[in-house]
Image (tube, rainbow, N blue to C red; front, top):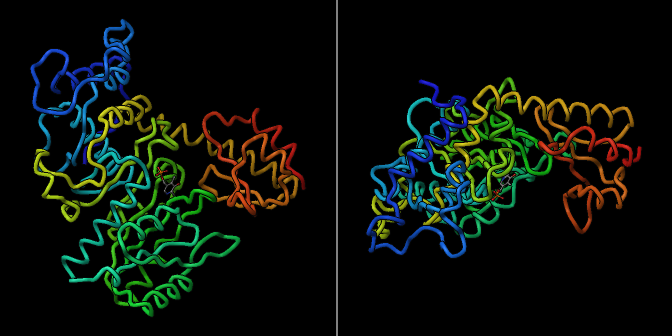
Length: 407
Ligand SMILES: *Cc1c(COP(=O)(O)O)cnc(C)c1O
């Protein structure tokens, strides 16, 4: 498979984005009278400001392409074919170059990790219903006690069950035993079909579920299941930090993945990415979406094409090697922080391939947490506070935090 992801110069990026906008319909100078869509309000957002010719992202916002629908499948709304091609490239880079998938994938830029996780559960719920004649009450989301709350939302909205496997308080990981116990518990409540959502870095701890614990135990139980990876936090981090990754698309049991570009990638909000192997997106198709060319297999409906362009611009500015280096810097800073905490004798959790350090609340004075905005696991009754080593979290900024943490 040819690598699509490569570093581009600023002028190459500009040329590609403006070229794509050119291929879209242009509400400024074409007679387009049949759609409830236009450029941004020009009384408020000036379209002729001179700096815009050097600002491909801002220009995309002003042109305001609508990327409604899924553009890796069949045909799509022809008005915005230029920028949809950029979105397809983002999907290809994420599925092939980052998550090492072979073959073909579908996907789209969702509003965030919540939507992408829900899209996965929606597809698999419909898959089990259509292919296995499952009833809603026989379908259950199986995830870890540290999973993101979007799984609870998905279960609630989709009218299916949720069963959490318990985790070890120190390793924050599920085990074969706790997964097997969770499967039995779910079966006792009538579950026959399992939607696994396995974490590639949890929000609070940066922990990564041992995916084999799920797949081994479900195989042993002989039940039907599908595996989705929640990489909303870790999808642009873990593949670059961990030398021995088990949960990307090289694992044939991984069927779909969520990535968020608005966390580690620093893209604007509204940039969750949903990726799935070919042949499944159709289970979420709404054929009633008949006014949309190519219909709609996404949860969201109308969405900004500028979001896909933002992700593409960031990935192409760094290129794969530049991105790897960026992640290494964050890892090294986190190593520095870990060493300081060890020297102080502070109790904390860290996955060695992550940039999150989660500290036992007993070491964190209230005022320190408040002043430096350390996020608790629970605002009412915190047991843990986390430090997330993002780009702006330099060692200089960490020094006073370390000084305030008590042994
Ligand atoms: C942030 C996060 C989500 C939800 O993502 P949003 O983009 O906020 O909707 C889901 N899962 C994990 C692990 C996350 O860290």
